[in-house]
Image (tube, rainbow, N blue to C red; front, side):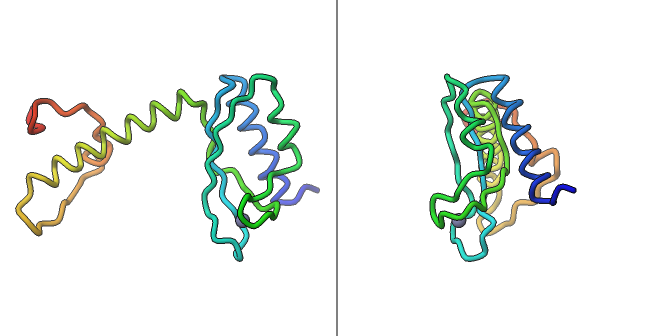
Length: 129
Ligand SMILES: [Zn+2]
């Protein structure tokens, strides 16, 4: 019977394998599970022209800070998928800043889910549409 850690590792490898099948440029986000390690998130940018990645990480990856084999997958995306997500998050951030800028000094910004997910491009210099 597989341990929970082994199942999580196998699922992570499968997610990376599927992302690698889409593109050879990947963005992998890992986190260290060691309580004694201050590292929490490790971003790895991969260029895997020769398909060397999966054989290298098949048994797990060591944390670059503590050296323990305690890294777990948080997310994996192709570089293009990451770029699209980054641009969307940037638009959401700008829209949030524009809403905040319209508030009187000291007022708190109350946002709906629709506000938080608003990734439309601002129209006009002051954000009015
Ligand atoms: Zn660590």
